[in-house]
Image (cartoon, rainbow, N blue to C red; front, side, top):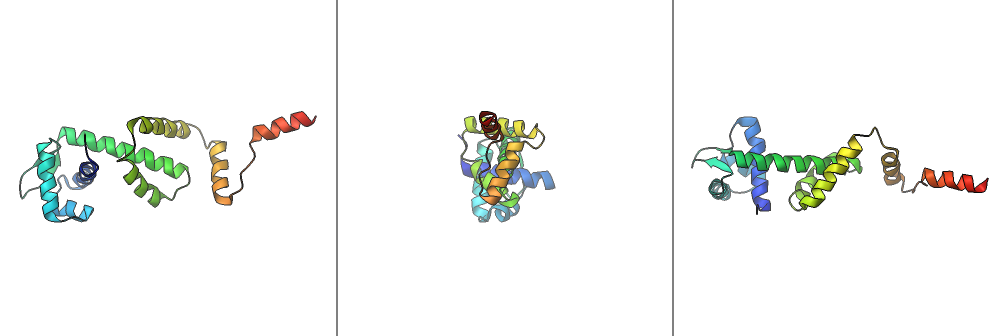
Length: 156
């Protein structure tokens, strides 16, 4: 099982490697706010587990397995972020929260959230979502249009 800390390192390495082609201890240390020795130690562990190519005093790159894990984590993050934004969460907060949630959410839940986000995105501005956003802004719970329609039919 991959630990949360391992996932965090893999994600940071992935982002740095996308920009520079490799990641150095200093890069990861700055990104995670940890000491150089902690990063060096984790690089060794990640190398032993087959996630990175690491040469002491050099940079690291992700192995095929490491890159697959990074891409899965990146996709999780994206879906969670989109879901939170759909709910009306500020983008910066959604990004930070997605970063936390992605490491603890169960796969079954993630699969369902992914389908939900895909479903909502495939429909042009669903009315219920717009009504939910208005409810969040105003605190006034709008009556369901179907309920209103049924009440009108009953009155006739």
